[in-house]
Length: 237
Length: 103
Image (cartoon, rainbow over all chains, first blue to last red; front, side):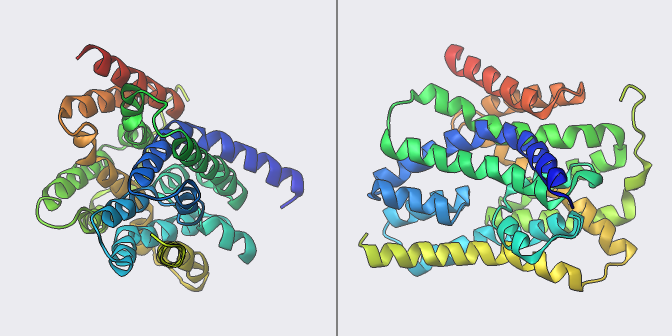
């Protein structure tokens, strides 16, 4: 891969990752406020986002600490909560064109729900490591910027604004799914089935496990019911 | 929390998060997938994203499920009409801001 290609793909990735800014900055702020209230210093709060880089588990960690949980319990819970990334990372790297080990060590740090969703729904020819790194450059910066802002100025944003941004991740996930459902009816049915399956499962088992089970079981069902290559591209594209 | 405890906590959380993210990047080259396994991996994004949205989207606002439902519908309708992802995200944020302002 030539240098100029890498640069172009990196910038394309940054552009693709840009919707995330509106999700990561406000949620980063919310995390930092929680962490500060749980007694972590400004530097400690930022340390979570710089090193762990996993929103849900960071929030869970400061919540558990606040309730007096042991370090071991928090680490174990983090492991279970983030175990889904093993599956997501498999999909990301299966789709990605070959790349050097060094870059893969760096890129795999950026496998999150959001980067996985963006990358694996992208056209296959765009799935290079430069594209993935560009995407993650925007995401990692936003997450840490949000954390920083929240840690320093815990209450400068009115609640109504931060609350309005709560929909951002869901809106992005829905926007990524919808065009695929539109052109593939059977895939749409499978997506609805997964939604029902997961909604039922969270009533009886922890959400992190419910998500893994409904994802895998429904994808397995899809092997026999969905034709991924039958997509009819609409004429207006 | 003192510094030693904090460093142990961050180190532990970082490792248990990073290792599952990193392993597949290096194991995937050593694996050969049949047609069915490959299809399975290609379907996971759709089922995983669906599971990330449902039922979570109903609890965007702990007290009022309508906040999440209307925000999600906004994004869904715009995406159906082929608006870019960023437009869907911004529109749903705006709609939810209006919901919070007037409800």
